[in-house]
Amino acid sequence: MMLAMKSLHRAWIVAAVAFVAIIGAAGFRASPGVMITPLEDEFGWTRGTISLAVSVNLMLYGLCAPFAAALMDRFGMRRVVSCALLLVAVGSGLTVLITASWQLVALWGVLVGLGTGSMALVFAATLTDRWFVRHRGLVTGVLTAGGATGQLVFLPVLAHLAESQGWRWASVTVAAAALAVVPLVWFLLRDTPEELGLTALGATEPVVRTSGRGAAARAVRVLRDAARTRRFWYLALGFAICGASTNGLVGTHFIPAAHDHGMPETTAASLLAVIGVFDIAGTVFSGWLSDRVDPRLLLVVYYGLRGLSLLVLPQLFAATAEPSMLVFIVFYGLDWVATVPPTVALCRKIFGADGAVVFGWVFASHQVGAAVVATVAGLTRDHLGNYDLAWYGSGALCLLAALLSSRIVTRVRDRRDAAILVG
Image 1: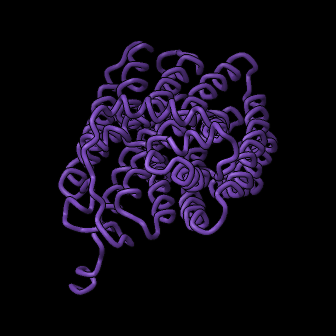
Image 2 (image 1 turned 180 degrees about the vertical axis):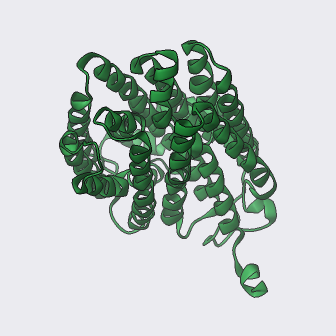
């Protein structure tokens, strides 16, 4: 046993801590779906109003990402992630005191959005860049699946609390979970293997790293350079559609949409949690595939199949979980964030050392798409009385994302791209 512990590379311990931290932050990511109806019932706010707070959260969750990647270079992952978890805890905890919708936007939207955005998927990309050479795609998939694991753990609990004890207990639970992870991150997470006199897993020699100053300036510079290439825009637009069809639509509105058809919220929340179960398997497998298969081909397949599944979803809603809905849940779960490992791999391959920051901007587009659709879907429900148009529109957009992904090239194809790669 002691021999096994000695032979275990520290990278695996760091990855395990990061996995737990991502699970802790994922608690809040799971809460909007189970809290929309209780907030609507207590305060009389429309779904469009509540969805605005969700949209602000999703927007900041994405827009913080590129700056968070640069801040991790400047101040270290441990400090940034610890502060981010504290923001999530404070924002979620203070939500129990709200009496007006603007307070929901300020706390649920702004404060928690900044916290979760500071340790979004760029955290996984940064950690794997620093700690892994071998198994990098696989570990990216596992860490990405941490969000789904958090959804699996928290959704049924939050739904039960919101229904039996009230939505405030659900909010306090999220705050407590985020707080509980802070000591683990502070004492066990390390920024680089070189800090401990080690090399990254699979590396032959240590990397000399310097503390990067001007985090914001670097993030903007990287965006400026990347935005001059068509490949960046294909990645960003495709990932914006990815966010629209997952966090923005299904993650936010699946539970209230199912409730509209007579399904109990706890049942709908359990179905969404099942998506998390299969998301773990799908994302880990996607990470494994990203080390072996052209990432562009993976994106084409993932987006295409997702679009087709959304086009049939409106016919599957019922008061009970019918077998056809269960098939959708399993399929959508496998595809949920399977797009992340190949997208990270493409950013790394195309943009090199700036790949993590570029992925931060690509992820920002993911959350912008999610934010827009979260509000649009809520307004659609308010005005049309159902979500059908939102489901069909999102399905069509996913087919467009498949087309955009097919046009991404990883070799220099024109003078503009050559200038970016060389300069």
